[in-house]
Length: 204
Image (cartoon, rainbow, N blue to C red; front, side):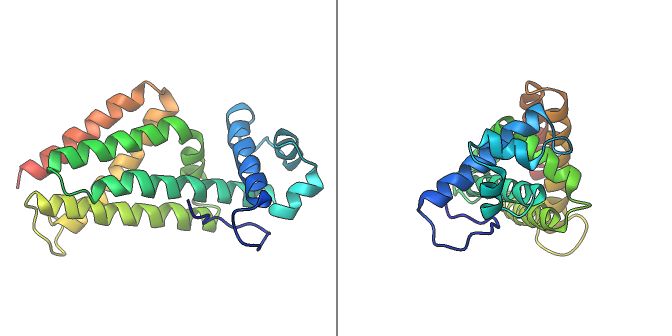
């Protein structure tokens, strides 16, 4: 996976520093569960990553930069796994089911990061750009799947682009709320989103 998140280090990839950055991000993700973003400190992240506070600053300028990088890593995985499913050429029903299953899996594995991205998008422009940019990619892909099912292209409120945009944000909010409640609720969220998506496709 090509690294797409910001760091203070500018050297090329595939070296020890990249491993250290991954350790920092893994530590921050674990602390999101035990401490929460507001409470965790740079010192705690550094300690959990097995380094000094000063060493962490070699890679990231602040706690916020760590979180931005963590969100970037997560949305990259979301695009690579769920997004790839949406471009598959199989039956529409299978494409929808696979995309939502992969999305649900990522919410199970990284729900805390994804909820933090939603919560902080309004105050951290870099996170908003990452999250909204990913949503735009998914909205376009969802629209393409709807078009394959017979929904017309165009700029009207009932055409594929508008429906894809609405469905994308419905899926995001449904998984967000399910993740807040319980990991078990993600399966129900997946099936609900699948039912809505199929209903939208089948009525054309």
